[in-house]
Length: 611
Image (cartoon, rainbow, N blue to C red; front, side, top):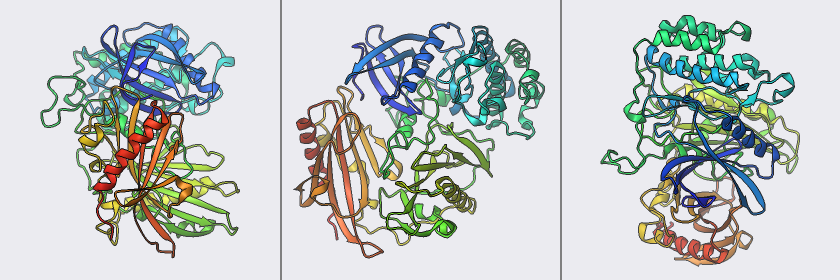
Protein backbone atom coordinates (compact mmCIF):
# COMPACT_ATOMS: atom_id res chain seq x y z
CA UNK A 1 0.00 0.00 0.00
CA UNK A 2 1.14 3.53 -0.78
CA UNK A 3 -0.04 7.10 -0.30
CA UNK A 4 -3.29 7.86 -2.11
CA UNK A 5 -4.58 4.27 -2.04
CA UNK A 6 -8.11 3.72 -0.71
CA UNK A 7 -8.97 1.10 1.86
CA UNK A 8 -12.47 -0.39 1.64
CA UNK A 9 -13.23 2.33 -0.94
CA UNK A 10 -13.51 4.90 1.83
CA UNK A 11 -10.26 5.56 3.70
CA UNK A 12 -7.59 7.35 1.62
CA UNK A 13 -4.03 6.82 2.88
CA UNK A 14 -2.44 10.21 3.51
CA UNK A 15 0.86 9.60 5.33
CA UNK A 16 2.87 6.57 6.38
CA UNK A 17 3.52 3.85 6.86
CA UNK A 18 5.08 3.51 10.29
CA UNK A 19 5.97 -0.13 10.74
CA UNK A 20 6.92 -2.07 13.83
CA UNK A 21 6.86 -5.65 14.99
CA UNK A 22 4.05 -7.25 12.92
CA UNK A 23 1.90 -4.16 12.27
CA UNK A 24 1.73 -1.12 10.03
CA UNK A 25 0.08 2.23 10.78
CA UNK A 26 -1.14 4.93 8.41
CA UNK A 27 -2.77 8.33 8.73
CA UNK A 28 -5.84 8.36 6.49
CA UNK A 29 -8.79 10.51 5.46
CA UNK A 30 -12.31 9.20 5.93
CA UNK A 31 -13.75 10.46 2.64
CA UNK A 32 -17.36 9.93 3.78
CA UNK A 33 -17.21 11.72 7.13
CA UNK A 34 -14.35 14.07 6.11
CA UNK A 35 -12.17 13.45 9.15
CA UNK A 36 -8.69 12.12 9.71
CA UNK A 37 -8.33 8.65 11.18
CA UNK A 38 -5.57 6.17 12.00
CA UNK A 39 -5.52 2.86 10.16
CA UNK A 40 -3.63 -0.18 11.43
CA UNK A 41 -3.15 -3.53 9.74
CA UNK A 42 -1.18 -6.70 10.39
CA UNK A 43 1.88 -7.46 8.27
CA UNK A 44 1.05 -11.13 8.44
CA UNK A 45 3.06 -12.43 5.52
CA UNK A 46 1.02 -15.61 5.85
CA UNK A 47 1.60 -15.78 9.61
CA UNK A 48 -1.69 -16.54 11.34
CA UNK A 49 -0.41 -15.41 14.75
CA UNK A 50 0.04 -11.80 13.62
CA UNK A 51 -3.41 -11.82 11.99
CA UNK A 52 -4.85 -13.14 15.24
CA UNK A 53 -3.15 -10.43 17.32
CA UNK A 54 -4.80 -7.66 15.28
CA UNK A 55 -8.19 -9.34 15.56
CA UNK A 56 -7.64 -9.69 19.31
CA UNK A 57 -6.81 -5.99 19.54
CA UNK A 58 -9.99 -5.20 17.64
CA UNK A 59 -12.06 -7.27 20.06
CA UNK A 60 -10.40 -5.60 23.07
CA UNK A 61 -11.09 -2.11 21.73
CA UNK A 62 -14.54 -2.82 20.33
CA UNK A 63 -15.73 -3.97 23.75
CA UNK A 64 -14.65 -0.69 25.25
CA UNK A 65 -15.85 2.91 25.23
CA UNK A 66 -14.05 5.22 27.66
CA UNK A 67 -13.02 8.89 27.42
CA UNK A 68 -9.40 8.01 28.29
CA UNK A 69 -9.01 5.25 25.68
CA UNK A 70 -8.60 5.85 21.94
CA UNK A 71 -11.82 5.11 20.07
CA UNK A 72 -12.13 2.24 17.62
CA UNK A 73 -14.44 3.40 14.82
CA UNK A 74 -14.46 0.39 12.54
CA UNK A 75 -12.81 -2.89 11.54
CA UNK A 76 -12.75 -3.46 7.77
CA UNK A 77 -11.57 -6.62 6.01
CA UNK A 78 -9.54 -6.04 2.83
CA UNK A 79 -8.91 -8.82 0.32
CA UNK A 80 -5.71 -8.43 -1.65
CA UNK A 81 -3.90 -11.08 -3.69
CA UNK A 82 -6.00 -13.84 -2.24
CA UNK A 83 -5.55 -12.84 1.41
CA UNK A 84 -7.88 -11.05 3.79
CA UNK A 85 -6.35 -8.49 6.15
CA UNK A 86 -8.28 -6.72 8.93
CA UNK A 87 -7.73 -2.96 9.15
CA UNK A 88 -8.52 -1.16 12.40
CA UNK A 89 -9.94 2.35 11.91
CA UNK A 90 -9.24 4.46 14.98
CA UNK A 91 -9.37 7.93 16.40
CA UNK A 92 -6.56 10.26 15.32
CA UNK A 93 -4.97 12.52 17.95
CA UNK A 94 -2.87 15.16 16.11
CA UNK A 95 -0.65 16.20 19.03
CA UNK A 96 1.14 12.85 19.12
CA UNK A 97 2.22 10.73 22.04
CA UNK A 98 4.02 11.64 25.25
CA UNK A 99 7.19 10.00 23.92
CA UNK A 100 7.97 13.33 22.21
CA UNK A 101 7.35 15.49 25.29
CA UNK A 102 10.09 17.10 27.32
CA UNK A 103 9.97 16.62 31.12
CA UNK A 104 6.92 18.14 32.84
CA UNK A 105 6.14 19.30 36.37
CA UNK A 106 5.10 16.57 38.84
CA UNK A 107 1.60 18.04 39.19
CA UNK A 108 1.08 17.91 35.41
CA UNK A 109 2.34 14.33 35.31
CA UNK A 110 -0.07 13.50 38.13
CA UNK A 111 -2.99 14.99 36.17
CA UNK A 112 -2.11 12.84 33.15
CA UNK A 113 -1.55 9.82 35.38
CA UNK A 114 -4.94 10.20 37.07
CA UNK A 115 -6.65 10.08 33.68
CA UNK A 116 -4.75 6.98 32.57
CA UNK A 117 -5.42 5.36 35.95
CA UNK A 118 -9.12 5.91 35.26
CA UNK A 119 -8.70 4.10 31.95
CA UNK A 120 -6.92 1.21 33.69
CA UNK A 121 -9.64 1.05 36.33
CA UNK A 122 -12.26 0.54 33.61
CA UNK A 123 -10.08 -1.81 31.57
CA UNK A 124 -9.36 -4.06 34.51
CA UNK A 125 -13.04 -4.10 35.46
CA UNK A 126 -13.69 -5.44 31.94
CA UNK A 127 -10.99 -8.08 32.41
CA UNK A 128 -8.51 -6.44 30.02
CA UNK A 129 -4.80 -6.00 30.82
CA UNK A 130 -3.05 -3.48 28.54
CA UNK A 131 0.48 -4.90 29.09
CA UNK A 132 2.34 -1.99 27.45
CA UNK A 133 1.62 1.29 29.25
CA UNK A 134 4.38 3.76 28.34
CA UNK A 135 4.75 7.35 27.06
CA UNK A 136 4.59 6.22 23.43
CA UNK A 137 1.16 4.69 24.05
CA UNK A 138 -0.42 7.76 25.69
CA UNK A 139 -1.75 10.62 23.59
CA UNK A 140 -3.24 13.95 24.64
CA UNK A 141 -6.07 15.59 22.72
CA UNK A 142 -6.46 19.30 22.11
CA UNK A 143 -8.97 19.47 24.97
CA UNK A 144 -6.23 18.16 27.35
CA UNK A 145 -7.63 14.65 27.64
CA UNK A 146 -5.01 11.91 28.05
CA UNK A 147 -5.89 8.68 26.26
CA UNK A 148 -4.37 5.21 26.34
CA UNK A 149 -3.55 3.79 22.91
CA UNK A 150 -2.18 0.65 21.24
CA UNK A 151 -3.82 -2.51 22.51
CA UNK A 152 -1.60 -4.77 20.43
CA UNK A 153 -0.25 -6.48 23.57
CA UNK A 154 -3.54 -6.55 25.50
CA UNK A 155 -5.20 -9.74 26.69
CA UNK A 156 -8.13 -10.79 28.84
CA UNK A 157 -7.13 -11.68 32.40
CA UNK A 158 -9.75 -14.37 32.91
CA UNK A 159 -7.41 -16.88 34.54
CA UNK A 160 -3.96 -18.35 34.21
CA UNK A 161 -5.03 -20.51 31.27
CA UNK A 162 -5.59 -17.45 29.12
CA UNK A 163 -2.23 -15.81 29.74
CA UNK A 164 -0.10 -15.46 26.62
CA UNK A 165 2.97 -17.65 26.27
CA UNK A 166 4.96 -14.69 24.93
CA UNK A 167 4.19 -11.18 26.12
CA UNK A 168 4.93 -8.17 23.92
CA UNK A 169 6.20 -5.37 26.15
CA UNK A 170 8.70 -2.54 26.46
CA UNK A 171 11.40 -3.63 28.94
CA UNK A 172 12.11 -0.18 30.39
CA UNK A 173 8.48 0.17 31.49
CA UNK A 174 7.53 -3.45 32.19
CA UNK A 175 6.89 -4.89 35.65
CA UNK A 176 9.17 -7.76 36.78
CA UNK A 177 6.43 -10.36 36.32
CA UNK A 178 5.83 -9.24 32.71
CA UNK A 179 9.44 -10.04 31.82
CA UNK A 180 8.76 -13.55 33.17
CA UNK A 181 5.69 -13.91 30.97
CA UNK A 182 3.19 -13.59 33.83
CA UNK A 183 1.39 -10.24 33.39
CA UNK A 184 -1.59 -9.33 35.54
CA UNK A 185 -3.66 -6.18 36.11
CA UNK A 186 -1.18 -4.87 38.70
CA UNK A 187 1.47 -4.92 35.95
CA UNK A 188 -0.23 -1.94 34.30
CA UNK A 189 0.02 0.01 37.58
CA UNK A 190 3.79 -0.59 37.64
CA UNK A 191 4.13 0.56 34.02
CA UNK A 192 2.11 3.69 34.73
CA UNK A 193 4.45 4.48 37.64
CA UNK A 194 7.49 4.08 35.37
CA UNK A 195 5.77 6.26 32.76
CA UNK A 196 5.08 9.08 35.24
CA UNK A 197 8.70 8.93 36.42
CA UNK A 198 9.82 9.30 32.79
CA UNK A 199 7.45 12.22 32.21
CA UNK A 200 8.98 14.08 35.13
CA UNK A 201 12.66 13.11 34.95
CA UNK A 202 13.13 12.19 31.30
CA UNK A 203 13.77 8.49 31.94
CA UNK A 204 11.93 5.53 33.48
CA UNK A 205 13.13 4.04 36.73
CA UNK A 206 15.85 1.41 36.82
CA UNK A 207 15.80 -1.65 39.11
CA UNK A 208 17.34 -0.78 42.47
CA UNK A 209 17.83 2.91 41.62
CA UNK A 210 16.42 5.74 43.72
CA UNK A 211 13.58 7.82 42.36
CA UNK A 212 14.63 11.03 40.66
CA UNK A 213 14.80 14.11 42.87
CA UNK A 214 12.56 15.99 40.42
CA UNK A 215 9.74 13.55 41.21
CA UNK A 216 9.90 14.16 44.98
CA UNK A 217 6.27 15.39 45.27
CA UNK A 218 5.11 12.02 43.93
CA UNK A 219 7.70 9.79 45.62
CA UNK A 220 5.19 8.09 47.92
CA UNK A 221 2.68 7.15 45.26
CA UNK A 222 5.36 6.21 42.72
CA UNK A 223 7.18 4.02 45.26
CA UNK A 224 3.95 2.14 45.95
CA UNK A 225 3.20 1.71 42.23
CA UNK A 226 6.74 0.44 41.54
CA UNK A 227 6.76 -2.33 44.16
CA UNK A 228 8.30 -5.56 42.85
CA UNK A 229 5.48 -7.56 44.43
CA UNK A 230 2.29 -7.09 42.37
CA UNK A 231 0.14 -7.68 45.45
CA UNK A 232 1.77 -4.69 47.19
CA UNK A 233 0.81 -2.22 44.48
CA UNK A 234 -2.32 -0.07 44.86
CA UNK A 235 -5.34 -0.65 42.64
CA UNK A 236 -5.95 1.82 39.79
CA UNK A 237 -8.85 3.43 41.70
CA UNK A 238 -6.51 4.28 44.61
CA UNK A 239 -3.83 5.48 42.19
CA UNK A 240 -6.35 7.72 40.43
CA UNK A 241 -7.47 9.26 43.73
CA UNK A 242 -3.93 9.87 45.02
CA UNK A 243 -2.73 11.34 41.73
CA UNK A 244 -5.81 13.52 41.45
CA UNK A 245 -5.07 14.96 44.89
CA UNK A 246 -1.39 15.49 44.00
CA UNK A 247 -2.34 17.25 40.75
CA UNK A 248 -4.44 19.86 42.55
CA UNK A 249 -5.39 22.60 40.10
CA UNK A 250 -2.69 21.66 37.55
CA UNK A 251 -3.79 21.62 33.91
CA UNK A 252 -2.28 19.69 31.04
CA UNK A 253 -1.07 22.12 28.39
CA UNK A 254 -0.07 20.89 24.96
CA UNK A 255 3.50 22.10 24.38
CA UNK A 256 4.18 24.18 21.30
CA UNK A 257 6.09 21.36 19.64
CA UNK A 258 3.16 18.94 20.11
CA UNK A 259 0.57 21.20 18.45
CA UNK A 260 -1.36 19.75 15.50
CA UNK A 261 0.35 20.50 12.20
CA UNK A 262 -1.27 18.50 9.45
CA UNK A 263 -3.24 21.01 7.45
CA UNK A 264 -2.89 23.64 10.16
CA UNK A 265 -2.88 27.26 8.97
CA UNK A 266 -0.23 28.33 11.45
CA UNK A 267 2.54 26.02 10.26
CA UNK A 268 5.92 27.72 10.45
CA UNK A 269 6.38 29.89 7.37
CA UNK A 270 9.98 28.82 6.78
CA UNK A 271 8.83 25.21 6.36
CA UNK A 272 5.27 25.06 5.05
CA UNK A 273 5.18 21.26 4.99
CA UNK A 274 4.17 19.16 7.99
CA UNK A 275 6.96 17.25 9.71
CA UNK A 276 6.67 13.54 8.93
CA UNK A 277 9.82 12.60 10.83
CA UNK A 278 8.30 9.72 12.78
CA UNK A 279 7.09 7.95 9.67
CA UNK A 280 10.37 8.66 7.90
CA UNK A 281 12.39 7.52 10.87
CA UNK A 282 10.63 4.19 10.89
CA UNK A 283 11.12 3.69 7.18
CA UNK A 284 14.77 4.61 7.40
CA UNK A 285 15.48 1.25 9.02
CA UNK A 286 14.91 -0.37 5.61
CA UNK A 287 18.16 0.00 3.70
CA UNK A 288 20.82 -1.87 1.76
CA UNK A 289 21.28 -4.76 4.18
CA UNK A 290 22.73 -7.90 2.70
CA UNK A 291 20.53 -10.85 3.60
CA UNK A 292 18.26 -8.78 5.85
CA UNK A 293 14.54 -8.42 5.16
CA UNK A 294 12.73 -5.11 5.54
CA UNK A 295 10.97 -6.26 8.70
CA UNK A 296 14.19 -7.72 10.07
CA UNK A 297 15.85 -4.35 9.68
CA UNK A 298 13.31 -2.79 12.01
CA UNK A 299 15.30 -3.87 15.05
CA UNK A 300 14.04 -1.07 17.26
CA UNK A 301 10.37 -0.94 16.27
CA UNK A 302 8.07 -2.19 19.01
CA UNK A 303 4.27 -2.15 19.20
CA UNK A 304 3.28 0.62 16.77
CA UNK A 305 2.18 3.97 18.20
CA UNK A 306 -1.43 4.41 17.15
CA UNK A 307 -1.40 8.20 16.92
CA UNK A 308 1.17 9.28 14.30
CA UNK A 309 3.43 11.95 15.77
CA UNK A 310 3.48 14.45 12.91
CA UNK A 311 4.24 17.58 14.91
CA UNK A 312 7.58 19.43 14.59
CA UNK A 313 9.78 19.37 17.64
CA UNK A 314 12.90 21.20 18.64
CA UNK A 315 13.60 18.38 21.06
CA UNK A 316 13.13 15.24 18.99
CA UNK A 317 13.59 11.70 20.15
CA UNK A 318 14.07 10.50 23.70
CA UNK A 319 13.64 13.26 26.30
CA UNK A 320 16.79 14.42 28.00
CA UNK A 321 16.86 14.74 31.76
CA UNK A 322 19.62 17.32 31.70
CA UNK A 323 19.57 20.80 30.19
CA UNK A 324 23.30 20.58 29.49
CA UNK A 325 23.83 19.02 26.08
CA UNK A 326 27.20 17.35 25.47
CA UNK A 327 29.08 17.40 22.19
CA UNK A 328 27.74 15.22 19.41
CA UNK A 329 29.38 11.81 19.07
CA UNK A 330 28.28 11.52 15.44
CA UNK A 331 28.84 15.05 14.17
CA UNK A 332 28.29 15.66 10.47
CA UNK A 333 26.59 12.52 9.17
CA UNK A 334 28.40 12.49 5.85
CA UNK A 335 31.80 12.72 7.49
CA UNK A 336 31.26 10.09 10.20
CA UNK A 337 33.18 6.87 9.57
CA UNK A 338 31.07 3.79 10.46
CA UNK A 339 34.25 1.67 10.36
CA UNK A 340 35.45 3.61 13.42
CA UNK A 341 32.78 1.72 15.39
CA UNK A 342 33.92 -1.74 14.29
CA UNK A 343 36.11 -3.96 16.45
CA UNK A 344 38.35 -6.24 14.35
CA UNK A 345 40.73 -6.84 17.26
CA UNK A 346 38.00 -7.76 19.74
CA UNK A 347 36.42 -10.09 17.19
CA UNK A 348 39.70 -11.91 16.66
CA UNK A 349 38.78 -14.57 19.22
CA UNK A 350 35.98 -15.75 16.91
CA UNK A 351 38.12 -16.06 13.79
CA UNK A 352 40.22 -14.01 11.40
CA UNK A 353 38.58 -10.55 10.97
CA UNK A 354 38.84 -8.31 7.94
CA UNK A 355 37.17 -4.92 7.44
CA UNK A 356 35.05 -4.44 4.32
CA UNK A 357 34.14 -0.76 3.96
CA UNK A 358 32.94 -1.08 0.39
CA UNK A 359 29.64 -2.95 0.56
CA UNK A 360 26.19 -1.39 0.78
CA UNK A 361 25.49 2.27 1.41
CA UNK A 362 28.05 4.71 2.82
CA UNK A 363 26.59 4.60 6.33
CA UNK A 364 27.73 1.00 6.71
CA UNK A 365 30.90 -0.96 7.48
CA UNK A 366 31.31 -4.75 7.68
CA UNK A 367 33.80 -6.96 9.45
CA UNK A 368 34.07 -10.39 7.83
CA UNK A 369 35.18 -12.95 10.40
CA UNK A 370 36.62 -16.03 8.67
CA UNK A 371 36.30 -19.22 10.70
CA UNK A 372 38.54 -21.42 8.58
CA UNK A 373 36.36 -22.97 5.90
CA UNK A 374 35.89 -21.51 2.42
CA UNK A 375 32.33 -20.36 3.11
CA UNK A 376 32.51 -20.39 6.89
CA UNK A 377 32.50 -16.74 7.85
CA UNK A 378 30.38 -14.33 9.87
CA UNK A 379 29.43 -10.92 8.48
CA UNK A 380 29.34 -8.35 11.29
CA UNK A 381 27.53 -5.31 9.91
CA UNK A 382 27.74 -1.94 11.69
CA UNK A 383 25.42 0.72 10.37
CA UNK A 384 24.65 4.31 11.33
CA UNK A 385 21.07 5.23 10.59
CA UNK A 386 18.19 7.41 11.64
CA UNK A 387 16.45 6.37 14.83
CA UNK A 388 12.75 5.85 15.28
CA UNK A 389 10.67 5.67 18.45
CA UNK A 390 12.81 4.82 21.52
CA UNK A 391 10.84 1.72 22.49
CA UNK A 392 12.33 -1.67 21.70
CA UNK A 393 11.20 -5.29 21.60
CA UNK A 394 14.32 -6.79 23.15
CA UNK A 395 16.10 -6.44 26.47
CA UNK A 396 17.50 -2.92 26.98
CA UNK A 397 20.44 -2.10 29.24
CA UNK A 398 22.23 1.23 29.67
CA UNK A 399 25.90 2.04 29.86
CA UNK A 400 26.54 5.69 30.84
CA UNK A 401 23.55 6.91 28.87
CA UNK A 402 23.89 4.64 25.82
CA UNK A 403 21.15 2.04 25.55
CA UNK A 404 21.92 -1.41 24.16
CA UNK A 405 18.94 -3.33 22.75
CA UNK A 406 19.47 -7.09 22.62
CA UNK A 407 17.02 -8.63 20.21
CA UNK A 408 16.26 -12.37 20.36
CA UNK A 409 18.45 -14.41 18.02
CA UNK A 410 17.21 -15.51 14.63
CA UNK A 411 18.40 -18.73 13.03
CA UNK A 412 20.91 -16.90 10.82
CA UNK A 413 21.48 -13.55 12.57
CA UNK A 414 21.67 -11.73 15.89
CA UNK A 415 21.01 -8.00 16.21
CA UNK A 416 22.01 -5.29 18.66
CA UNK A 417 20.99 -1.64 18.54
CA UNK A 418 22.68 1.26 20.33
CA UNK A 419 20.40 4.09 21.43
CA UNK A 420 22.39 7.31 21.60
CA UNK A 421 21.75 10.12 24.10
CA UNK A 422 21.30 13.80 23.23
CA UNK A 423 22.24 15.45 21.00
CA UNK A 424 22.41 12.28 18.86
CA UNK A 425 19.06 10.83 19.86
CA UNK A 426 17.91 10.88 16.22
CA UNK A 427 20.72 8.47 15.26
CA UNK A 428 21.18 4.84 16.27
CA UNK A 429 23.86 2.24 15.60
CA UNK A 430 22.62 -1.08 14.21
CA UNK A 431 24.85 -4.12 14.58
CA UNK A 432 24.03 -7.46 12.95
CA UNK A 433 26.08 -10.65 13.09
CA UNK A 434 24.91 -12.93 10.29
CA UNK A 435 25.91 -16.27 8.84
CA UNK A 436 24.38 -18.45 6.12
CA UNK A 437 24.36 -21.82 7.83
CA UNK A 438 27.14 -22.70 10.21
CA UNK A 439 27.26 -22.80 13.98
CA UNK A 440 29.00 -19.56 14.94
CA UNK A 441 27.96 -17.96 18.29
CA UNK A 442 26.25 -15.05 16.55
CA UNK A 443 24.90 -13.33 19.67
CA UNK A 444 28.26 -13.51 21.45
CA UNK A 445 29.83 -11.94 18.36
CA UNK A 446 27.12 -9.24 18.21
CA UNK A 447 27.57 -8.50 21.93
CA UNK A 448 31.33 -8.13 21.47
CA UNK A 449 30.87 -5.77 18.53
CA UNK A 450 28.27 -3.74 20.46
CA UNK A 451 30.47 -3.45 23.56
CA UNK A 452 33.38 -2.22 21.45
CA UNK A 453 31.19 0.33 19.67
CA UNK A 454 29.89 1.61 23.02
CA UNK A 455 33.48 2.02 24.17
CA UNK A 456 34.32 4.07 21.09
CA UNK A 457 31.28 6.30 21.60
CA UNK A 458 32.17 6.90 25.25
CA UNK A 459 35.57 8.21 24.25
CA UNK A 460 33.98 11.08 22.33
CA UNK A 461 33.17 11.97 18.72
CA UNK A 462 33.85 9.11 16.32
CA UNK A 463 36.59 9.43 13.72
CA UNK A 464 36.03 11.11 10.38
CA UNK A 465 36.54 9.28 7.09
CA UNK A 466 40.24 9.25 6.29
CA UNK A 467 41.08 9.82 3.57
CA UNK A 468 37.81 11.51 2.63
CA UNK A 469 35.97 10.03 -0.37
CA UNK A 470 37.08 11.13 -3.81
CA UNK A 471 35.45 14.27 -5.16
CA UNK A 472 33.67 12.17 -7.80
CA UNK A 473 32.45 9.54 -5.32
CA UNK A 474 28.72 9.10 -4.73
CA UNK A 475 29.54 9.57 -1.06
CA UNK A 476 29.88 13.26 -1.91
CA UNK A 477 26.48 13.42 -3.61
CA UNK A 478 22.91 13.96 -2.45
CA UNK A 479 20.40 11.38 -3.75
CA UNK A 480 17.53 13.85 -3.56
CA UNK A 481 19.25 16.18 -6.05
CA UNK A 482 19.50 13.53 -8.78
CA UNK A 483 15.81 13.84 -9.63
CA UNK A 484 14.21 17.26 -10.07
CA UNK A 485 10.53 18.21 -10.12
CA UNK A 486 10.36 18.04 -13.90
CA UNK A 487 11.62 14.45 -13.94
CA UNK A 488 9.32 13.38 -11.11
CA UNK A 489 6.31 14.76 -12.99
CA UNK A 490 6.42 11.43 -14.83
CA UNK A 491 4.90 9.90 -11.69
CA UNK A 492 1.51 11.51 -11.00
CA UNK A 493 0.90 12.72 -7.48
CA UNK A 494 4.52 13.07 -6.36
CA UNK A 495 5.65 16.25 -4.61
CA UNK A 496 9.32 16.59 -5.50
CA UNK A 497 9.85 18.94 -2.55
CA UNK A 498 8.60 16.45 0.05
CA UNK A 499 10.85 13.35 -0.01
CA UNK A 500 11.68 10.90 2.75
CA UNK A 501 15.42 11.44 3.32
CA UNK A 502 17.83 8.89 4.79
CA UNK A 503 21.02 9.15 6.83
CA UNK A 504 23.66 11.30 5.13
CA UNK A 505 21.15 12.06 2.36
CA UNK A 506 22.30 8.86 0.69
CA UNK A 507 18.71 7.63 0.36
CA UNK A 508 15.66 9.49 -0.92
CA UNK A 509 12.10 8.32 -1.52
CA UNK A 510 8.99 9.94 -2.98
CA UNK A 511 5.42 8.64 -2.62
CA UNK A 512 2.51 9.49 -4.90
CA UNK A 513 -0.55 10.85 -3.11
CA UNK A 514 -2.91 9.98 -5.96
CA UNK A 515 -1.96 6.40 -6.80
CA UNK A 516 -0.10 3.43 -5.36
CA UNK A 517 3.40 4.25 -6.64
CA UNK A 518 6.69 5.15 -4.96
CA UNK A 519 10.15 6.05 -6.23
CA UNK A 520 13.12 4.89 -4.15
CA UNK A 521 16.65 6.08 -4.77
CA UNK A 522 19.79 5.15 -2.85
CA UNK A 523 23.50 4.67 -3.31
CA UNK A 524 25.19 1.30 -3.15
CA UNK A 525 28.65 -0.16 -3.56
CA UNK A 526 30.04 -3.63 -4.04
CA UNK A 527 31.41 -5.89 -6.74
CA UNK A 528 31.19 -5.16 -10.49
CA UNK A 529 27.84 -5.75 -12.20
CA UNK A 530 27.14 -7.94 -15.23
CA UNK A 531 24.20 -9.42 -17.14
CA UNK A 532 23.22 -11.48 -14.10
CA UNK A 533 22.16 -8.19 -12.48
CA UNK A 534 19.58 -7.40 -15.15
CA UNK A 535 19.14 -6.45 -18.79
CA UNK A 536 22.25 -4.43 -19.80
CA UNK A 537 21.78 -0.97 -21.30
CA UNK A 538 23.44 2.44 -21.17
CA UNK A 539 22.01 5.63 -19.72
CA UNK A 540 23.76 8.92 -20.51
CA UNK A 541 27.04 7.08 -20.98
CA UNK A 542 26.74 5.00 -17.78
CA UNK A 543 26.41 1.19 -17.84
CA UNK A 544 23.00 0.26 -16.42
CA UNK A 545 20.98 -2.86 -15.72
CA UNK A 546 17.18 -3.13 -15.70
CA UNK A 547 15.63 -5.79 -13.50
CA UNK A 548 11.83 -6.27 -13.33
CA UNK A 549 10.76 -7.28 -9.82
CA UNK A 550 14.35 -6.73 -8.74
CA UNK A 551 13.46 -5.08 -5.45
CA UNK A 552 11.57 -8.05 -4.01
CA UNK A 553 8.60 -7.56 -1.75
CA UNK A 554 4.93 -8.23 -2.39
CA UNK A 555 4.30 -5.35 -4.81
CA UNK A 556 5.49 -5.15 -8.38
CA UNK A 557 8.68 -3.19 -8.90
CA UNK A 558 11.27 -2.34 -11.48
CA UNK A 559 14.89 -1.86 -10.45
CA UNK A 560 17.50 0.04 -12.44
CA UNK A 561 21.16 -0.11 -11.39
CA UNK A 562 23.37 2.69 -12.76
CA UNK A 563 27.12 2.18 -12.50
CA UNK A 564 28.69 5.51 -11.63
CA UNK A 565 32.33 4.50 -11.36
CA UNK A 566 34.63 1.58 -10.60
CA UNK A 567 37.96 1.68 -8.82
CA UNK A 568 40.50 -0.75 -7.29
CA UNK A 569 39.55 -1.95 -3.82
CA UNK A 570 41.99 -2.32 -0.91
CA UNK A 571 42.21 -6.10 -1.34
CA UNK A 572 42.91 -6.20 -5.07
CA UNK A 573 39.24 -6.48 -6.04
CA UNK A 574 37.26 -4.00 -8.11
CA UNK A 575 34.62 -1.84 -6.41
CA UNK A 576 31.61 -0.38 -8.20
CA UNK A 577 29.61 2.59 -6.95
CA UNK A 578 26.02 2.22 -8.06
CA UNK A 579 22.83 4.26 -8.07
CA UNK A 580 19.97 1.97 -7.04
CA UNK A 581 16.60 3.24 -8.40
CA UNK A 582 13.27 1.47 -7.88
CA UNK A 583 9.76 2.35 -9.00
CA UNK A 584 7.27 0.24 -7.10
CA UNK A 585 3.47 -0.02 -7.00
CA UNK A 586 0.37 -1.30 -8.68
CA UNK A 587 0.82 -0.17 -12.35
CA UNK A 588 1.77 -2.80 -14.91
CA UNK A 589 5.36 -4.00 -15.03
CA UNK A 590 5.77 -2.37 -18.42
CA UNK A 591 4.64 0.98 -17.00
CA UNK A 592 6.85 0.63 -13.92
CA UNK A 593 9.95 -0.12 -16.00
CA UNK A 594 9.13 2.74 -18.38
CA UNK A 595 9.00 5.18 -15.48
CA UNK A 596 12.08 3.62 -13.84
CA UNK A 597 14.30 3.83 -16.93
CA UNK A 598 13.14 7.39 -17.65
CA UNK A 599 13.95 8.52 -14.11
CA UNK A 600 17.22 6.57 -14.15
CA UNK A 601 18.25 8.40 -17.31
CA UNK A 602 17.69 11.73 -15.55
CA UNK A 603 19.61 10.55 -12.50
CA UNK A 604 22.50 9.33 -14.67
CA UNK A 605 22.69 12.70 -16.40
CA UNK A 606 22.97 14.43 -13.01
CA UNK A 607 25.95 12.35 -11.90
CA UNK A 608 29.42 13.93 -11.94
CA UNK A 609 31.91 12.73 -14.50
CA UNK A 610 33.83 9.82 -12.97
CA UNK A 611 37.59 10.12 -12.80
